[in-house]
Image (cartoon, rainbow, N blue to C red; front, top):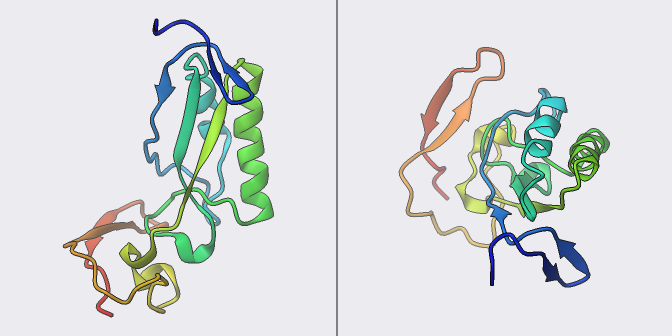
Amino acid sequence: MILFDTYPLGKIQLKNRIVMAPMTRSRTTQPGNIPNTMMAEYYAQRAGAGLIITEATQISPQGQGYSFTPGIHTKAQIEGWREVTDAVHREGGKIFLQLWHVGRMSHASFHNGNPPVAPSAIKPDARYGWRMKTETGVWWSVRPQEP
């Protein structure tokens, strides 16, 4: 196996065996956690990888656990991801979307004061999470909510 050889991934032919791992960027347009032109440019610049796996993407409003992360549950978010995928495809790249729901690791501040939704009420073994104030861009730490 040679790194720069093509690789068949199911019905998809990758131009090489390099996979770009996901990395949260926290660069969405606000309000709405909408993928944007800056994100399209970022991913298109990396289209030389055989496969790009996007940053974690919320599947619902209840799935959010970090500020400025993208979603794919509104029309505007879907259109934003379409801009991203179109840009990657124009550069000859392949891209997969990583779906995400943080569950119990979320915080009530993302859900109008309501507790996070998860398959279990067991408190996670975690000390802090992070949140950004949309108005100021300032990050602060928060403790996961008690059940």
